[in-house]
Amino acid sequence: MKKLIGVAVALGLLSAGTFATSYAAGPCGTGQIIDWDGNGFAWETPANPVNNVSPAGNQLTCVGLVTLFCSPFTDLDPADPSTEYTFVLSGLSNALATNVQVFGTTTIWTTNYGSGVFSVYAGSPRNAPSELAMPINPPNATVPANYQDGTAILSGTLANFSVQITKTGSNPANGSFRSDYEFTGGTLFSRVSGTGTGLLSGLWSVNSLPTGYSAHPDGKFDNPPTATRGSTWGMIKQLYR
Amino acid sequence: MKRKALLLIFTAVMAFAVPARAADILLFAFTGFDYQDPNTNAATYLDLGEGYHTIGFVTSFGPDLTPYVDESVNEYTMFTQGLTVSARAQFGTFLVVNFANGGRGRYYQDAISGGTHGTYGTNPPNATAPSTFTDGSMRLGGSIDNGVLTYDFSLGQGNFNGDMTLDEGPDLIYIPTGRRAGWTFHGLAGAPNPTIPTGYDHQVQGECQIPDSTPTSHKTWGALKSLYR
Image (cartoon, rainbow over all chains, first blue to last red):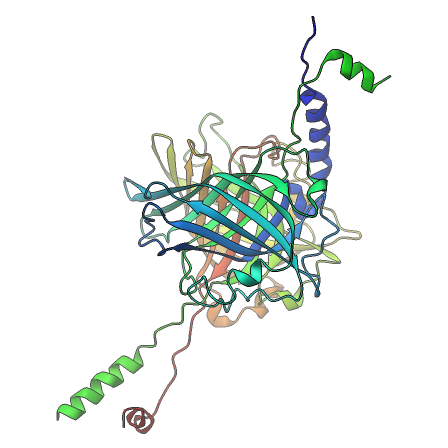
């Protein structure tokens, strides 16, 4: 009887070893592969949410400037004066309006934007707007255009993209976002081909925004797991002969 | 009389400067993990009296600090402490926790060559955490008040935020005096995932930032009148 034996165990052990050494990699030790910080913005069309409520059918787009690459992209320098690394998340849409819940003095706004796509670009010259001077009311002449010029080094799909904003008492509203992602293309796809579904998540700040923007996301793509595949005992033994 | 009244109204309107809608100013951004200490009730996440800590690495600096940091020779870490649960409410799968005032957040600088690399280990506090994140030189810190954490266990995501007033460290001189209060320290408390070391609770990803204020401008009465002639 042939047994189907997943190679997940062996690969899982390898992955655990990778995580153990990545803890010694400074900022990369949290397990992310791509990180962005201050230059990250979102907006919705046809109109931004009002009081954190997004009507059904809105389209969400996010752009940003990469600030950190981790393995297997540590050869890419986000501070390279001649190359700018940017990303765009797009194609996201909420089928339902924002769900609002109130518990005591806490209000929770949860919006599910479903599926979309993402791309990471390497472009020259560096022309993404400064986060201190974002052109108003995107889409405009430079947003998202200056975030999606250059070569798409990575691209992929997004699924289950959700945003949750909370406000407790007199504290300012604050939020987070999370999504599943999977690499599917790009000129550097070969470095991550064979990986599975990873986690994209981060802070979703909704205060003090440039005109026309709905949020300032600060987030990261976590290291995706190695995809598992079925195998047989005979095939496993073959590997070690 | 009517003209005088109109001019007075215009003056009143001009005196109220409408701030430009600019983005927040980033102080620094960070990524890391969070954990509880003391964790007197392991069965309950952030029970009353328990402590909440975030620990990790600074991933980028904003305009106030960028001229004074060098990530090619230094490792920059962050650590928050003194956030004690003062109130806790759970609504189904949704948790809201308030922290007592007087928490503290700091960032540190440690030479890459010759310094001790920040190492999370497991089950903090341990032999390396937070010690390897707080050794070196404490550069800038401040109090964290009005701290709150919310977490949705069904979604596996949450966030935390607090008001930060910068008040210590040699890098305090780079922060304009009028901009040392009013910072927001906030971030994601992420979903459970395999990257989280044993004993830590969530990945965190966040920032310390402050709204960018637009100053008002002063005008003479003559200059104001000339606008409407």
